[in-house]
Image 1 (tube, rainbow, N blue to C red):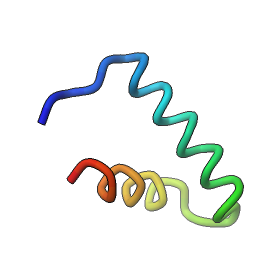
Image 2 (tube, one colour):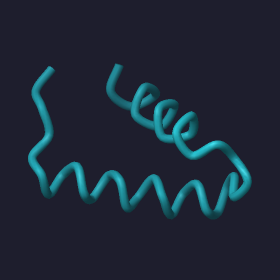
Image 3 (cartoon, rainbow, N blue to C red):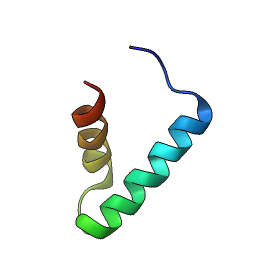
Image 4 (cartoon, one colour):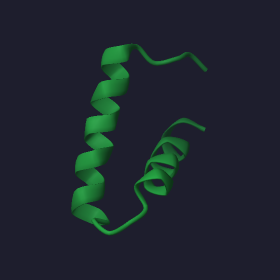
Length: 42
């Protein structure tokens, strides 16, 4: 697995922040982000 460039990481972090705000606004953000990345890259 390759690492992310800085711009890719920023894009993904903004995307997951927007997704969480829409789908699970009260969710634990750290857990939501972990699941987001795990579902896509592991």
